[in-house]
Image (cartoon, rainbow, N blue to C red):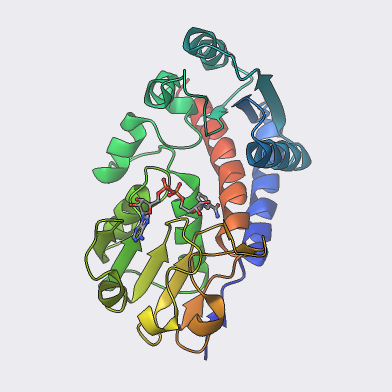
Length: 286
Ligand code: NAD
């Protein structure tokens, strides 16, 4: 029997805790604030940013969306980031990806104050994650949300074989670090991995984040494994599907996240959770 991991339900629970934390901070005179900067008119990015803004406002936070033209220069974007770095009402800064070609994305990531790095992509925070550094720091929201899902369903990575397919800075690499820190034995696979499907079949926990619709099918899954599908892809009919063929995986996997309704809702809920934490930590460091 396969248990479907209900990302919407867990996200609701996370959001409720965030709302409580916002109310508590407000009593101390702190209103968590997030600034989302978007450069250009990419339609998918516009939707993501609108959803983030709506959710932050709904949870009682201060939310700013800074829409910039596609012609924005690197220097202009850097100066706007500097503005939010020194704005005490903003605790989290997010620069929506993708950025236009004239902008050097790693330099933009580096320009965000690590204490306001709500995405957790700054090398200082990534370094802390890799070294399992003690103390508070932001961690990439999608993989962190996946760890919350595992915990909610009582799936302890310790001692398990985990295979992470995808090595991006946004998902694959921080996911591998989080699972390693949680004592799993982790293998990272990617586009140059040989015999991917045989490797996938060794996984007790299989995280798939490639952007390739239905790359993994039921035949590639170890019976009883936990399958986390990060993909948000379109099939031939334009329907939103994952990197895992859900129908053939059902009945083989022990646990599986659906697309939509699995990892997606957790990413935004975790982003809100991180914003509130940054606000809390900023108070502690003053
Ligand atoms: P990316 O393009 O940066 O990275 C894709 C990774 O997949 C690369 O490391 C690449 O080596 C690997 N890959 C590509 N083809 C492969 C193949 N045939 N076999 C094995 N590995 C292969 O993508 P990303 O930003 O990590 O996102 C991956 C997917 O997750 C996308 O569909 C994206 O939309 C989705 N995503 C979803 C959420 C969410 O909240 N649900 C968040 C982030 C990303």
